[in-house]
Length: 313
Image (cartoon, rainbow, N blue to C red; front, side):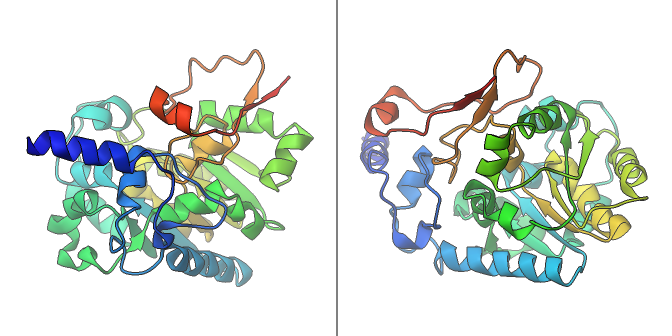
């Protein structure tokens, strides 16, 4: 009976895209089922997400303007499970695909060397970090959704305008982005003329030899580094994100699935990406790209009108 009641309440709450003001960020919208439920709980955040967003945005702008190296990392449930020794599910499929020994103590030290650690605002996800970070993150933390929002409302591209900007991520996604940015309408949509550097990492198995991935990135960029790097490194970021910052003396921002958005393949029900417009290439073979699955159900589509994709030919 309790399970049925919980499911009914969950279903009713998710039917309306209204969320409590403290969960809103200007220029963003979400259709994610769980976000629509949790966003109706008045006291889920200690202070408005917009305030966190403004602080993160201000910090990035300050570090860029002063040309100071700085790194921001997002820490979700997958990263927590990995650091606790879990190797199943998506970790084994995408990140650690070989049976190699991992020194988790070294990985824990590496991720803590980043300047700003951000965590999931959902306590059910964030508490996975208790054994690593301690009880402090129950209330004292920066929500990682602030980083997603920076990409989702395209504010991040205004922050980096006028600087040399690089993007680091899986080769197939970078190839799409490079093609998309040949089109003036896409450059206009992003508000960015393009990226100055495209740095590829393996689409799968980057954790297998993360140190080599770091060496390859640094070797590729050392001679003429960018001021800012937007990166999607998967779990390998735990080991190498701060290393990229130090070796290239740059601002390094872990945008995660924001990379999928720039490549035009972000699910419209990804939290805070509800208003994002995916630009697609006609005749392009997307089958070899590791993408997140769309999972909005029929009920949600009937109730909400989603932004249509733009097809570029």
